[in-house]
Image 1 (cartoon, protein in one colour):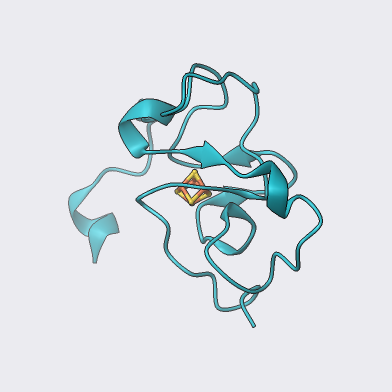
Image 2 (tube, rainbow, N blue to C red):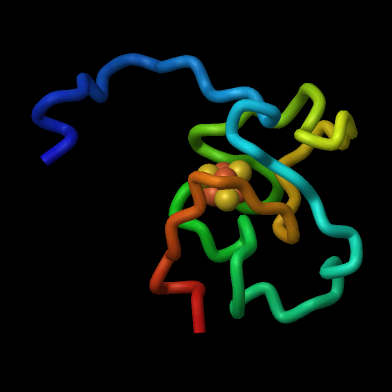
Length: 86
Ligand code: SF4
């Protein structure tokens, strides 16, 4: 298990949005975020607007700075959260 190798008693730096390949797709703001490839149903998403492994601030791959991890965003590290995905 990862927790046996990686110490869990300290904080690690998060990845920048640009390094993670993060983008937000405004077109999907009102979509059903339980279905598809969205931060909302990723295991790393922290409601309402954060991610456990990617920073909130800084430019995304399109150079845009929203200051949040949006539920309708996504990045290359996406991993499905079976409790949210339908
Ligand atoms: S897809 Fe997952 S890992 Fe990537 S920014 Fe969104 S919540 Fe974080």
